[in-house]
Image: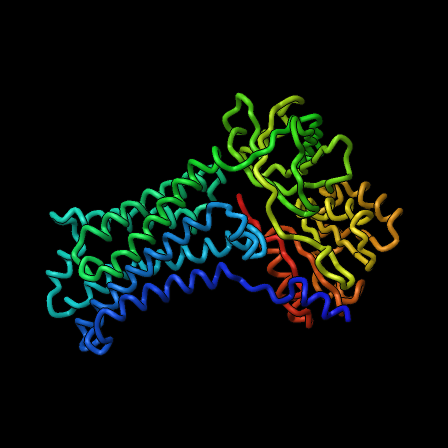
Amino acid sequence: MVEKIEVSHSRRHLRIDILAVILFCLITFGIWAAMMPLSARFADYGASTHSLGQITGLIGMVLFALTLVLTTKNKMIENSAGGLDKVYTLHRTTGALSFIFLLFHPLLLVFKYIPSDWAQAAIYLWPSRSWGVNFGMLSLAIMIVLLGMTFYISMKYKDWKISHKILGVAFIIGCLHTFLVTTDISRNPYLKIWMILVCLLGVVAHIYGSYLIKLLKKQHKYNVVNVEQNGKFTTITLVPTQTPMEYKAGQFTFIKFHTEDKTLNEAHPFTIASSPDALPDNQIRYVIKSLGDFTSRLSEIKNGTLVIIDGPYGKFDYTKYNNEQIWIAGGVGITPFLSFAQSIHTSNFKKKITLYYCTRDGSEQVHYDELAKISETTKNFKVMQFCASEKGQITAEIIDELTSLKNKDIFLCGPPPMMNAIKAQLIANGVKKNHIHMEEFGFK
């Protein structure tokens, strides 16, 4: 009986966003393939490499456009993906695939000259008198630099946002290349119309996501009423200045502080560390660890500071499931579980919950006393401290010994390496993947 209820809630989540990406690529390939028989396109070595170069360029641009669409924080896309963190995971995947396809696009076109004419191959990759060709080379060069920085350099969140704005410019330059060179697009009206629509979709998504979203999307105004510093952690409490934001326990928002310090004027994502009815006057709370320039300055914020909140986002929700649950928090990953724990009384969730609060040492277990008090007054909630300095790293085997993993739903939030390691261990210990729920944000 219980299992059937859970399946009806979200065990079989259909990822419409992924299906849409696949459909866009199939439509592109279908229109291109219908132009002439594939036997003619792949008749010999030269024709084959040229055809592969064409289709990789087309699909690469389609994936590039969809990558920009996935940055718009669209609610429909978030709902179809099962959370904005899942959307951004798909965003990274489509971005990487787009880069690979667009990188192979000129290389495959050049291969038709190799090995017969190396000089012509070299000329093909060199700037020419054709602006259409040069636009393509410039767009690809920008992608190589920015994605190389993203993959191999630990970027600050502010720099990450700037890099994505520049990627939008690279896409526009790539669109110019698409229509200024003589290709199948210029020869086939159906492919031309389709690629015009794709490029318009990407350009609109870039303009909206980078510039218009601040003007068009509803945002919430709050004031700071309390700032507490506890070691590396800053707890900030806000009160609404107008109609309070509606949210669920476990969700996150993007918050921006209106101060003279430009470092704090950029919106950053943080999980709400309180439940909707836990604090008086519709207050909300954030618990933030100092990890960089932005977070290290939060203790300097004064009471009365205006805060603009964009959100809420996220589908990290323990109330969807009816099994007993295990919550595993790593460091500042405790924030959604603080919100969860405060909401147990009003959620009517009656099954047993065990929270493992994992840190390097006891000094990092911020708000543990609050969780302990909730545990004392809530029969079905238990919190367990787990300090690596005393007991070593927590593992699925340890959890199974202390709290059987059988027939449990398991929620994870913490540093990505920790979550990935424990997830792999849980699966190795027989836990089904659809019983493991993770908050997968990893912004720096």
